[in-house]
Length: 238
Image (cartoon, rainbow, N blue to C red):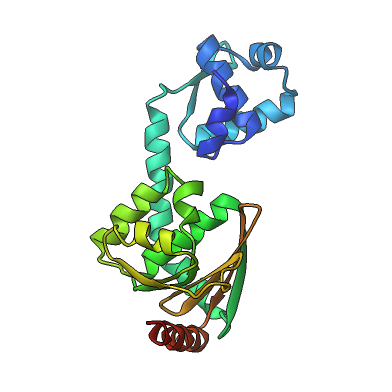
């Protein structure tokens, strides 16, 4: 088993190695841990102390020597749950800190498919109808495993997509889906960009060679302005 897996739950590399070594050796002393793990003595002692604090290692004293042993692996569940409960406790205070220095206008840049996912998860969090200028439907093609989850949540929350599509065939296909309506932009007005307006936010996505880069603006006044412009264009198309 790869000891790096334990790093995903918050253990350091050395702590992971020491814990895995103890699982393998059972009750043993530091000398044997050094031989098996290849770590320096000081790093082993530091790791053992921290693992003991976390309840992942115990020890007994035999003949004036400490013998260490890993607690049973199920203890890892307890450790993760304790971390989760701790985060729940401090989350309200962290949220207060987050809001202390927020400016009236916030901007963020997202790159790649993970960035696109983050934008759409933010849409769900905002839980408002979404206006899309230059809709292309590329997300259905580029994120085939993510979209079903997003669509399920969007429909569950009754969030509407109101779209101005680049192409008529895209409009005809996507408006078959639940809570998606729209019109088609006139010929010659298609582009590589998509503008998403939702709640107090605007997310502009540039598709270059099918690689997305998104620029998100957090400001209600700007979002309302974009919404008005969208409505102006939408209402002018018959």
